[in-house]
Length: 302
Image (cartoon, rainbow, N blue to C red; front, side, top):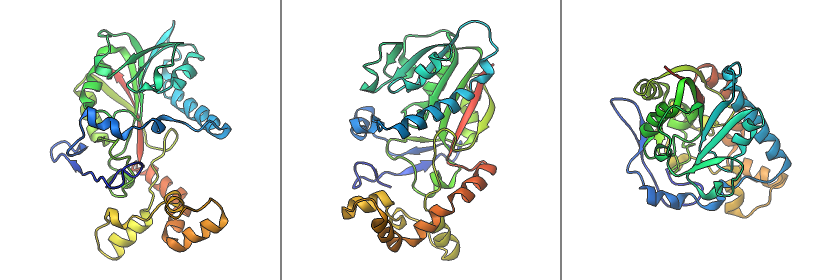
């Protein structure tokens, strides 16, 4: 599939390891090459009231995964890997945590209210158990050496500390079959089994998995078209079969948002409209089967 955000003429291939089940882009852009696919606008959030409300709801859900630490006496230290502009660490600092961040992009350069380690996580100058919790929200799928990140977590996390991280679910329909991943920014693709392997190799024990849309979403966009083509017609579902999203349709045809454009889109792809209407039912079924597009894992250092 191509880079649907910026370079639609550049295609990338995802493969799966026959031994461990890890998915990965092959070949992978080098660290120098990958910067091309992260323009400045990629890191910008819309400065709207609705987005601010969404971020607060998201941070509250993320903080909920750390509630097991609430009973611990004394100050608790949090390291947020991929802290971006520092919004989540600030949210936790307001709730009594001592916070630090790690960020490779320039978006964190203006942070002055807490310490931010610039660069790759495995290279930060901390090499002893220093933190009660380490978080990584939608980070590990972006990095070139995820094992190095797990290894570093084990190094900097205190005994009995928590590692909380969210990754796309490679066992899901959205990730594996529907071309919903953010390629080529997503480099590696994890299942529950591969996550457990990474944890066990680094002295970490999986405690809980939340397979749902509470923090981020990876909805099964075009599941209906996929089912009709593969189950009814018995054909392979290829990227060429994926219809434009409504946003892409407006951009290609230079149309404004509105009812008239929505009707034109429904005429262009009526299956997409029905597909979207049935998302709540399909997403619920996927979450019950632990096959939704993203999972949040809570692991403890043993």
